[in-house]
Length: 179
Image: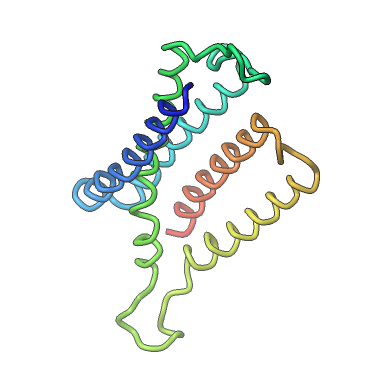
């Protein structure tokens, strides 16, 4: 992909991802709850991550590598559609997750009571923030130390995609267990 087309694609992706935040916030506040919006957004985000991972692993969805940078084969229209669809799914998922996560965390506090003891010490504070942060740091450090996709884009992206699946499943599981 030529540099101008690549920068336009990246700019369009950034704009779409930021625009979907408004749509996701509107959907969460008007039609569904924050939890459902985060869950549905996570599904779309994971589909986008999966399609990006599969396009990096499989030989058909991307052009052949060109180490010399001379007479390189450009991506076909079908390969570009795979890329655009993957970025669109990721943007839609981003729009469902990002506007709701901060307010979902803030809703866990009971601000009507004074003092720290009066505030709820519940699901988001204890489980999500503590365990998720510990797990993320432990898994990422382990993966880097063992060389599990630290610099290989194919395996590295799969590790990121798999960790997002795990965190989404834990989010739903702990929410259902503790509510």
